[in-house]
Length: 330
Ligand code: TXA
Ligand code: MG
Image (tube, rainbow, N blue to C red):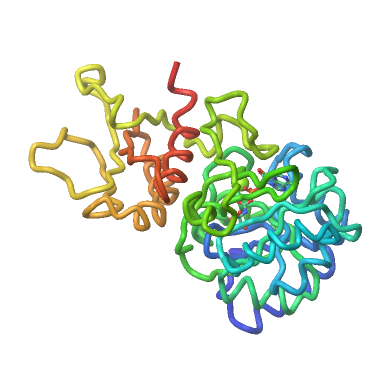
């Protein structure tokens, strides 16, 4: 029986009581679907790692419904840190997670035993209602098996984790489509740990001394724990359009993910998904993961994906593409 239910008030109430009693619920956010458990319940949080096959050293994101609840999950006693958070809080609710010193009530597993916690207020009515009704913060990574593409619809979650969850709240397709931007406020200067929809350029307006994130091939770069070089990869071989040499793939079934309308003299791809007619990066971000999943089901020999300049939202899109193609580059 399908565990997908429409996100009505009644079903959200049911999901909230499932969370309160230590179960796992998948729910929509504006970024991707999350696999949630009560962040104060160590046993419940451990179920997330088992369900995803996630290494125990890869911490989760703790979701709260309002800014005044940050101090229930984080220690804000350092005034300069509180001041920085205050500035960033203009971007909440939204696709931004902030790493802060961990508060004592958060289950150690939610933070992979680190002294810090990633906190986010999602900008999605279903997620916010669920967080309000369950009266506890929800620890949630993306609702996909470890190292696969994040889910942006309830059906994506059901495809792979149906057995592992009690309920999947269906709130439609996620609008942002990429995981949240992560910023750490721990240490001598703020550091971007993961690029996302909220760009480095935007964050700099709030935190002028913010250090940028370096691409995953730079081994000296500070990256968030658990953000391995290879990540989000489809099963099918994936390469960037800039590296595609048609003559090297004669007689193969090749799929294309295009960021703009197809041209008349286009290579004859077996299947193509056009994410935007005119390189609109918000449209590309919204549907990139769904396109990777869709083409991955087609038994293709190869998927070719467009690229874009790594600025603004393009930095997050290219980070995902660099990761997903990593195993196919030198
Ligand atoms: O948009 C999102 O971020 C979604 C939705 C559900 O909120 N969540 C999500 O979680 O995509 P996911 O699977 O990316 O896992 C959380 C990541 C970890 O892999 C790690 O990189 C980072 O957040 N993280 C969590 N706690 C951290 C900490 N204390 N310090 C540094 N990074 C942390
Ligand atoms: Mg994830």
